[in-house]
Length: 255
Ligand code: ZN
Ligand code: FE
Image 1: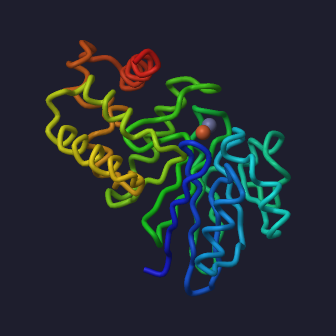
Image 2: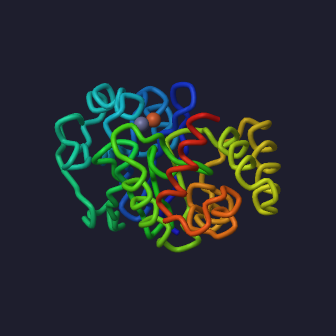
């Protein structure tokens, strides 16, 4: 493994990430809620900054871009579909595009729903997926611009990635997400066990990021909308998957 990932807490509950390719020495930062903690983290590591990768246009993911870019002039990468709302991009990407960090490929997924033009970055070499506010650890982003059908389609794409893929999302919402998940599937044994682990992690102030997709598929209610046991728990036997997803999202909004 030549890729190393750094989880960088920013603002109240945001995360930025730095990922370093030791072969080339290149580092990318994914989302910039705040420049200072990112600069501190990468300079502590002695990493140079070669790319800034943005997931979506919300202020809590891009507010520090200008300052970071002033400090270290790295090209900014973001969604072509969201160009008008993002800082000026050197590289505009779309679903299915692949670019490189050093010698490592980075695949782009359109994961619209929370916003339109939201992207996720998948690093097969690190088995890591950076999801912003689309798929979140044990949850998913609110539907501000897209609808349930759109978000379900986005999540369904991510569900096809290898089971060992690790998920790094834009916020530390996992404890609250776990509480909500328990309201949907109180008898899910994997969920009960995971909820216990999450409260231990959070009690020690540790991030819950880097969960495997396999564990997400077993415990994240938003990824479980197609499961018969979830449909029957909601009294929605036979309903289309996306409608079950919509109901879970509606319940979370009112939780
Ligand atoms: Zn957002
Ligand atoms: Fe956010």
